[in-house]
Length: 305
Image 1 (cartoon, rainbow, N blue to C red):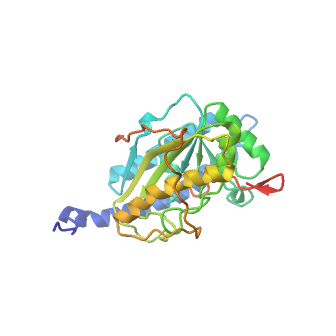
Image 2 (cartoon, rainbow, N blue to C red):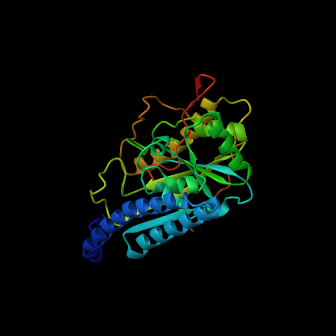
Image 3 (cartoon, helix red, strand yellow):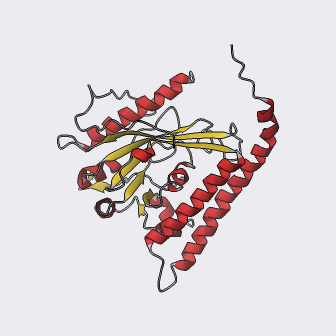
């Protein structure tokens, strides 16, 4: 039987990785506050930078941050299958949300992503000035929010959404909120799923911020299936179809580690019988905050989405 004991080099590097972990944690917090203060000052100017420019700044900062984490060895991040994604049309990127690092990892790769952020932050002392300057969307506003999101998709932007609404609490996946499906139905935009695998539970709800995870932290982002809204589907059915796929894929990982995969929703979501006719295949993988990108939660015509 192969030994699972860490190598000598791994044990010698542990103190270095632990120091790096706390340094990057501090940089994340201070950097976020500092950049928001800067953007708050820019909002007072008569001429503000364009959303595209601010998104470029955020992309550059996140790319440097993730690059340094990988360069020091404290994190190992892999992107699989992203080179197959089309660049000529708007679509919704829907991913599971195991960690606070999820949004930064997406933003480090794509400068044109538009995020949905928590309305609670909009009315707090941590008001996200950077998100507003970048043209990110708050998940409040009902029909107006949907129109703004649809407009971004029509312009060819990618909308980053974590449909769980918060970081995964137990098992493989929280129940998905249907706001993203409502946007997809209204805009006729495809929903591209991405599977985020946080093998080290870094910055997850299962672990306190200052509790050191298994290092180096290993995170994989893999392009999954692409879903198109069906004219015959309700919002709930479309949401459940995507949830069933994500849950099945993520529970495979839990099973491989011998872990239990409870359903936090308290029910079993059955898989569709056979592939959906509009479900896109052929995306063969190839190596290559909390507060950002949460689903809309509102009411339309008195009915909850």
